[in-house]
Image (cartoon, helix red, strand yellow):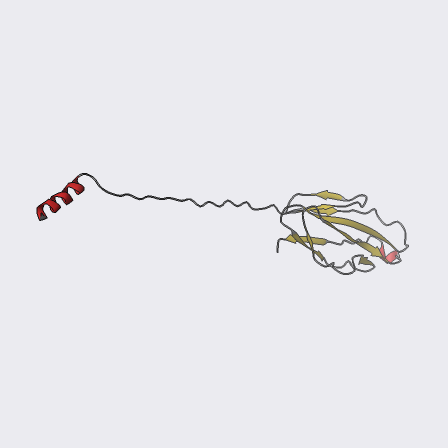
Length: 151
């Protein structure tokens, strides 16, 4: 009887009784980085906007002063968010012009966060007091540096 049971066991092994289990899975993630940037523009007559992303320039070469009367040469510029990533915009003033000239942007503006298409207007420029003969041939420049970061 033991032989019969043993023979039956050999018979099952030899006939290919077996089990095989398999399984598989895949996980995928795709990601895209958004866009980031700003645009500069101005409605001030005579302003020239140049450059491109990362190197914008906005320049106003005002006409020569032809009178001793106090006056000013204002400049308006607009910064617009231009990307899916919000831009934190910081405007810094350069060195103050020498007397009799002064910067019309009296204090640096607070930082603003601009979403795509949102904009912020800024006003600056040069003012001067009553001029005298000692002021002939003087010139002045104001520079505003606009920096945009994502955080």
